[in-house]
Length: 528
Picture 1 (cartoon, rainbow, N blue to C red):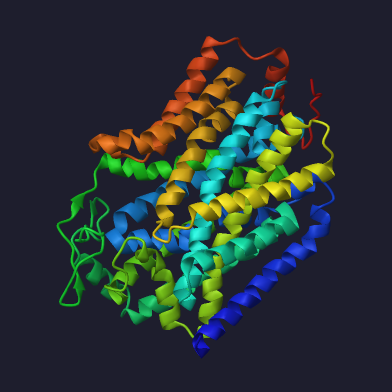
Picture 2: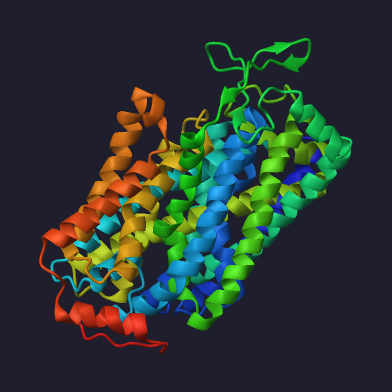
């Protein structure tokens, strides 16, 4: 390593030490009980709730995946996705957060998402709990893999070392940190990491804009590429058979702009639907200390999200002017943020900016690992296999499950040609379609039945796989993002099956009415 690389490494080590320090501080409190470990004892303030929710949501995708999309094919795909995410964020905080916070307490003080759904319908045989936990295990393992890919790309790009080795090193660090501190440490560090992420984005976009000759020069360059700066058109890189963009006279080649019609826009906007089923965000709603503080959290979250998404998209646009032939594949394009940072910043500052990517990755992967592990340990092991398991046994199984999930995710992440955006989009669709319609209807439709809930989860998850692997290959109107048709299908399954089955019991309806009309902070449901 040369001197510059060593400075970058030192800055990142300092950052990692700070993250570990947070884990150590919260470890004692987190390990007092499984409720503290999984939900922080419902003690989060509005700032930590908002910032940790968004940081855990966006992940390394915000700093690498989204700029990479904008760099590769221009504004449309990235911008419409960002708009969908911003709208979805707002509606989730506005519609779901307050009702879920209240209902999760009424539903026997539920501390995980599968537990909430199961208690919401007063299950005895825990079918909903088991299915929800299994789907969380599947999709969060894929999600964790995307984070490990980010770690591998970051470290291999910075230090010129083997991708697989660097991916494993990053995964081990995240795993150790998550085992140590639980939800409180995760949320506290996510708050810090949300700040690091937005500062890193702002620093790079300002410096890069200056280096590019100002916003006018960036816009002029983007307009010279067919479809690159269009909201209703898409730039088309000319590539060889291997997917590498061709270069002529030092300039990347683009073909004619392709159309970007209403169906494609709807497909991108559908990203916003994913929020209604996203466990790492929904858990923050359940964990806030006071329902009344959710309004402030919503405002904080929206400011962060709008700034971060807009800047991330613009970084990709700027990158095309400053480094037009640096990244000639779709996979490589996701490193444009790293290229800008290491090219224009002093090494020690670049190291802290690189910590922004690490921050985004850690803030998401620790959430994914913890929620997935809790889904098995709390909901399957204690909820089904060994109902009288002690807190100590549950915590042990949690840590064993964390290790197993991390190993599977590392195996998925071994392919260094993985595109972060693609991995995230599939897992996002999985959660959105599996849990989104069920969450909305469970909170706001009293007629929702247990059978309808099961049908909705299975139908939504199944349609994500069917559409992605089979139907989308037909092309044309079928090539839309799988979340949209799967979300609609899941909602239809819930409504149709609920109307065809016996209406909920009197006790379930009383729970619903109490949550709908109540303003109190604490409910006490008597378990059947």
